[in-house]
Length: 330
Image (cartoon, rainbow, N blue to C red; front, side):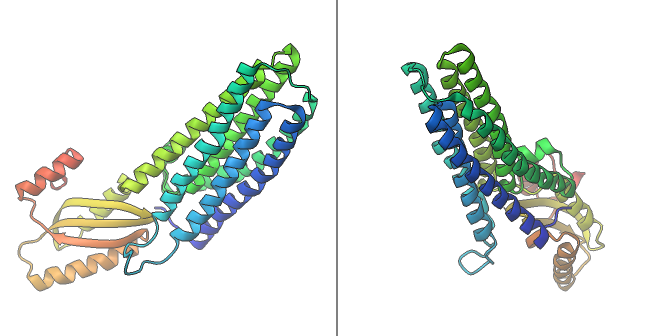
């Protein structure tokens, strides 16, 4: 089961801060090298790094605002703020990074003007940028491995459906940065070997396509979380098994859940209780279930338990339409 201890939160902040420092440093280096050499690929990479820096600033805002406690205007808390600001970060990558890279690339290819600056200056800058980006990537990858172990999920599954889009953003951004550096180096090298400026412009276009893919993946992940994705299926199965083991319970008829933040799950249960229990017994059972569910599953936020009958055909039909099966039949 996942947890969200203060150490985990601090680690996420450290990951974003390290990525911010690395991207600001390499952005300045790339910008200077691009202006001196006239390389469109280096200028595109500079835009990429400045875009990533904007992304990290937005992610820091996301982490800070999502930790605000629940209040009367937001009774389920502010956890989804992290998803909103992460969506803005994805848009920032698209607008500042991909847009400028496409512009610079097509301008270079269609203009076809020879660049007069020394191209050799790009190579040490790209090498230093790779070192800084590699340090940031190592931090993000390490946190991602720990997250997948805690949540018992595959790396691919976590990347496509993350519980924390801020870590996902840093990992994808740093991975794209490493690939972008290789593309920029290839573009500059081919330009220097052949004398054709087209290669430099083509590298910029490829970098733009790379950033477009990253922005799309991040936006899709944030879209799912903003709309209201359910909790991990394995967690829900464990909850159903736990509830059905209680002496007052015949069956769990329906389970509704939604991620309202990092390791913060809103849970609604429709339960068929034993018919022989009195109303007072059911009342005590619901209170006890609430307490024990929070003890066994610390990621649960608000929990609602509603008595229901497994023989209610309308309810069974709604559950079957949602899950493809009636839970009470399993």
